[in-house]
Image 1 (cartoon, rainbow over the protein chains, first blue to last red):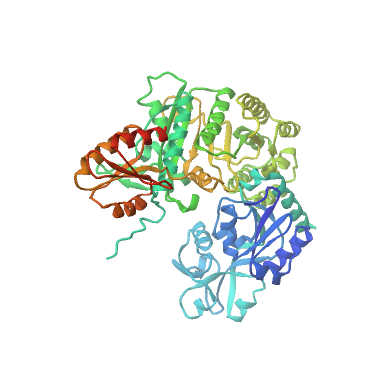
Image 2: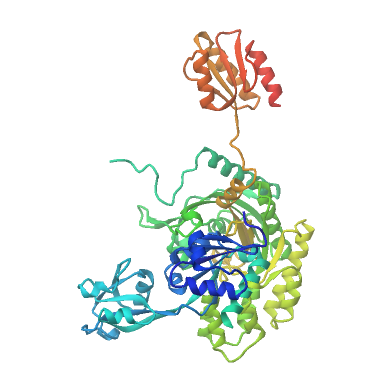
Amino acid sequence: MKAAGKVSIALPTGVLMPGALRLLAKAGLARLSAEQLGRQLMVDRPRIRVILVRPADVPAYVDHGAADLGIVGKDILWETPGAHYELADLRFGECRLVLAVPLTSGLDGPETWPPQMRVATKYPRTAGEWFEARGQSVEVVRLHGSVELAPQVGLVDGIVDLTASGRTLKENQLRITATLGVSTARLIANQASLKTRTDAVQAAVGRLREAASS
Amino acid sequence: MIPRLGGVPGFRDLLPQEAEVLREAQESVLAEMRRWGYRQVITPMVESIDVLELGIEAGQRRRLFKFMDNRGEVIALVGERTVPVARLVAGKLRGAPLPMRLCYSGPVLSTDEGRFQQRRETYQVGAELVGAPGTVADAEVIALAARCLEASGVRRYQVDVGHAEFFHGIMDAVKLPDEVKAAVRGALAARDFVTLEALLEKTPLRSAEHELLLRFPALRGGAEILQAAGGLVRNRRSERALGELAQVQELLVAHGLGEVVSLDLGAIRDFDYYTGITFEAYGPELGRPVAQGGRYDRLLARFGRPAPATGFVVQLDLVCEMLTQASRPPALPRIDAAVAWSGPGLKTALRLGSTLRMFGMRAVVDTQPRDPAQAKAWWQAVGAVNLIHCRNKSVAEWSARGRRTRQLPPEQVAGRLAGEFA
């Protein structure tokens, strides 16, 4: 049972975790080390409960009301749209979702795409919709890791993947031909939490917003 | 091949405990509706897609289970029942005078797995008040929804009341190019305030309406929020909406529901469907509305009988979830008596079973003879409160939990049990 005045927030493991922890501290909500949260997975403070889950699981925790708020990359929200409110751009963890092809490939703009394009990605929904919106027939191969490898072994024409610096792509002899979107960390909220515990949740949202924009 | 004992994914078996809770909740909600003068109708599990298309938007239509019947017509399993009821009101009930109060219950299906616990079949009870315009009718259905939740056993809930016209007025007044307006609607429908902010930031004209749109999720509170919003909007549609909200709130206080009602000007609903007052009821801890509804004055006209209408559905799956999570979850009703027998006692046992049921008790009569020790084991398995073992016409052995066993004539056992039961 959650106390009425207490807000729970789901944080993602991985690259966004340090930024999320810094933001919580700056907002005056909780001062936690990555090591402590990583060990306990759930930490209770007088005004907030922090839970640590896999990035792709953050929307599920929030949509089902197990957490009032969540911090999650926009890339995850593209893939798993749900019933939550997307309240604020927290302005950290920026990266781009790009279409990349081998350096040796002749593919570039849409006019060079083959009638049936094959791409590998961890983001099948986003990639599929992007090509569909451009009238391009596409076969999306869903992979779970090392997507960069797929075009090199001839599995696909290109990949749709997330990149921050572009280094991994370069190391794998891939070049970017299009950007599908720019992702940053977002603050999401459960729709009922905003209504049933308005004051506590809005107060936490206000503090996080302020911390993110200053 | 091993049969798939779990059933089809997304479709649920309700075991005795769950089935009992659901049935009880459904019955109590329908009974409350009947107390308010709503007549029950039963509409079919399926509906022609042509009929459904008149009332639901493209996204919902895509999520329906559809098939073709032997005449080549596309049929869908119903995903909600307001549209079938509208078809009835305009069709078979076209001679009946308005206003008309109707209620219904039953399962609804959707291919959408994003629903409550990935259920593709959920249970709803709904009520529609057709032919009554105005805030008194709006307040009636909101009050009825609240009382239905209470009747089902839900103790802690709140009702948020909003108004579709408040949003439409803002969208009329806000100075934006049409394509940006469309994007703003899209962002709001997706509850994406980051995109909304970006869209509004790009426009040079800042107005009070901009601020209201950006603060949408926070436009919630008591009567004071109407004044605050009234100071910001300068358009007829929104102002009229605020006036109606004030009336509905007063009426709900008169209904005795002032404590549970809040106003939510930022409620995001299907704005193309709803035309006036809307509402959602929430319980604690449940992440989504347990009942929702509102005014939809344009639907009936599409069926050829223009009439204002308002109504709501109660999501029984969520009601049951709330009841079973409560501090005192409902227990499976006890079985009062297990009636065992041996030798010539069978006929006595059958007679005794009938007598007990006539008194309103739940009684199970055994299907095979057992000696006293076997009977005790069977009694445990049945889980009944009393065991009555009939050995012949004149003597029955009566055991009850925590009491010594007594030998009595069967009619005396029945009499005493009836006394305790009453």
